[in-house]
Length: 243
Image (cartoon, rainbow, N blue to C red):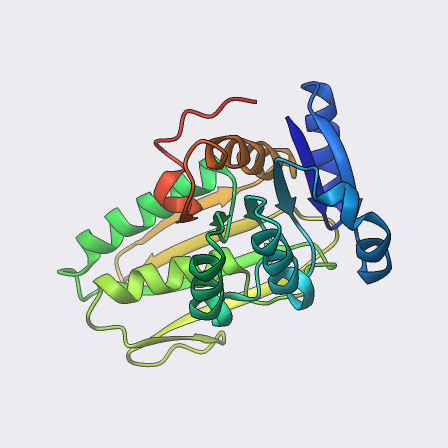
């Protein structure tokens, strides 16, 4: 299959490596506006695109994919405040998109586990929740998209929590979130439920970027067969796309 890669940082390179290993064709790698001007014709020959770029360019990249009728998978986070706008443009252009806060299948299992645990904690008011995440120093958004998704999923379920805040100070009705940027850490997320008697912790630790790249490629292959707009979490545990 013919792929375009949008964004050529560590994730873009990891995606390219896996695609070439599996004998797919990478017809365009685009990392900045100058390359868009030079490679737009090659981009138009792609059957699907994968974006791991920057929050500031992810939305324009999606729009170019929609306008050229190329399905696109977006692993970039930090743009979700424009989700309604993107949804409208995708529908207007008849585009296809899979987006998500985390493309690791294991992380999506973890997000489901987080919701299941929150359901149990709804009736256990003696437990207070907190969330901590750690990523590499080059990650621009904080907290991570995954941390925001985890926090918002808890808020939807646990009625005694009204909001999350980027803080290490507990407060009534607040889910405190801490974000750390350290070295080359691919990603660690821990949800803690604390009581005077005990703590319950669930943690997902990514060992490398490979899992994110594998998930994005599976999503891209799946999207070419299922046009539309999807949150990766809604398809991650059921899609049967193969690398």
